[in-house]
Image (tube, rainbow, N blue to C red; front, side, top):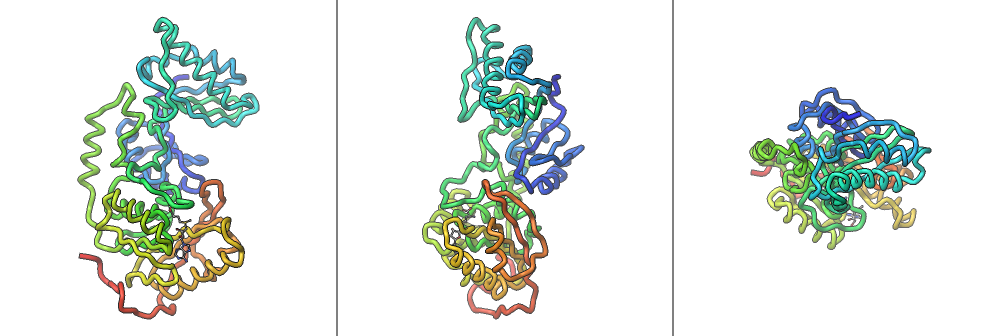
Length: 395
Ligand SMILES: C[S@@+](CC[C@H](N)C(=O)[O-])C[C@H]1O[C@@H](n2cnc3c(N)ncnc32)[C@H](O)[C@@H]1O
């Protein structure tokens, strides 16, 4: 059945579905429905462009085009051969197929996607005297997504192409960088009000502070990105897309508080500085070399989020000691702050020695993680120091 232009499926990481649904609400999406690792809403072309440009916690934006039942690769081929693929793209455009298959009928996922590819190529061969479009798995013009659950086959057009975590300006990475979509999710889950300071005191390559900075200045996360597959679709409305980009540019504001990225590794500091420069955030993000034990944040309200080492590369006693030091730093230096920590190390997290007011189950890469949020009220041991004691926003 052809179901083109009815629904938009926004994919995300497990645990971020609700945050993504809230983001879609702010875009005025209609009939929002949360499903596993995705959020579905009604289709319209403007919303499709906005989802790709503006959603911070979305990995891919798909538009389902065909749904049918099939219980063998041959059957899939026969059905797909009857589809007018030429309505979606031209022979001189490249294409590729992404797939997610969970089915007893399709034990070899790759084989099912090959059958779909053959059906598409054979259709073009029949129409164009033996000629077929090229396959380009790196940066195709047209990307199809084949989703099979049991005998339910859905073919979607992937409007994003590469994953939307690739914001278009990130260049350097250190060990274990967090995905941009997850980083943005952490900042949104922390409910940082953007009317106060923000710190990542274990910033690595700076992903979390970069995401926080784009939120602080109200910049759409993918405004600097140029590659989107929807630009190669037959219904691409360039003037609509340009108008949205112009509007988003005009919405960028100044941020009068501090965003600080610090780390005790020289290499991480260099990497963060490089990334901050590349993103054009020199005037927004301050980068400091410091251990978390010594970080003295600006006075007043703020939010700290850290993604510390999880212990795969450290001995248990070392990781316990590090997490104890983190807990002490929260208590001694972060009065007035909301402190967030993501870790897969449930045992090590107990060493923080504080009761979280919120806990979220998330996935970082392949690791099940907990994101704990602590409210550091007045009355902790923090004493005023002479350095970095700003109580007011920056001018
Ligand atoms: C998992 S990485 C953070 C990755 C980061 N979120 C990113 O996206 O690139 C953990 C970071 O903690 C830093 N670190 C470890 N112990 C520290 C300490 N005591 N004080 C400050 N930073 C520390 C490491 O240098 C490393 O960069």
